Image 1 (cartoon, rainbow, N blue to C red):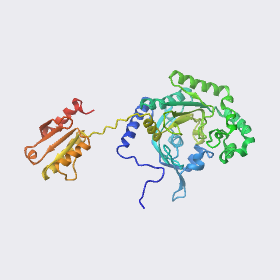
Image 2: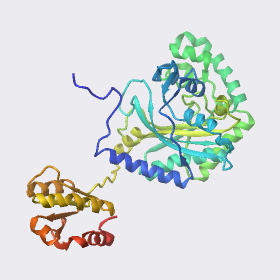
Image 3: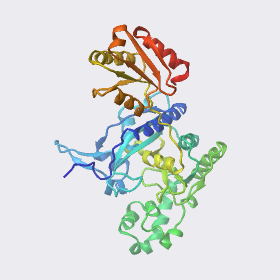
Image 4: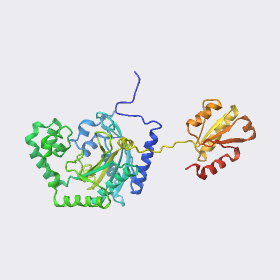
Length: 428
């Protein structure tokens, strides 16, 4: 039996990885403009982090985590999401003591969730995320949403829908929680097993159920917006006003709750409305999580962030027919004929690369015609040709592939000649 990649994982090969690199570079540029700094956390953490930080009642913790015991008997889990790890790092390294507040972080990281693989949903998924820790200003909520929308718009996506909701503060949530219990309790036996458990542990998540979404009780469930106290209501109005000031369109969805226990106040999702994108339309989601840092034994610290699926972002670009420039044309390809010329080519390629010129050569001892074909496949801008005669005269032929123009250049002037050529506009 041949060994293949595990189900729900994928290899990113040359020809595809360039698209990822292009997208990642664009995102990094946006993050720098918004004054975010990169953070990298371990691939696995102590299981307790996600039990406490994500929530025991969530599907992630109950059903989807890759958890194992190491040789020391410790329970470890492959990271299923990014916020808990960033929060743990924030507490462990006492970033709350940093004089520059709030702390604004971003990350690119693989996540691992055991779920049924389908298009755009993998068991190893790649995520871009940001976290802002240390400010409870509603303007930060708007900035976080603005950053996500800017990433999509600068990559060329247009068919987007932003939905927002408020989950309120603790008082508002507690009042709404009791109202949900009172509402759904008469229908308990009609709900799926998961929702029957959620009704005891976290009734807000009943509203997020995919199985019972068409149950009549869902349509008449009390809205959190009817239970917001004055402070929570003002907070939500401020967020909406800031979004309006930024020219960002949004829709309020009273049933948007997100799937993690640590959210409060602002929650949001960004969806693709592109034709043919698929049934699962969510591209990114996030919200405010005041209280998470305290749950991880840190000081009282407000936070907000989001996670953006990279696979789904690439799918959205494809659905909207947005072409990604993956120009990987080679600067120079050396075509050498003869044993001594081939040896000299090794040195020349080395010198070209050390001077900032992208170069490659033949390593299969092919005939000249085959080497030219290789240069053509690599889309080389220039072919450098020399054999034993050129080597004896210490010159090399430089041929521009697009025009066929060819010049004989002394080997001692080759690097300067190419640098002058590229600085004239050939190489960007």
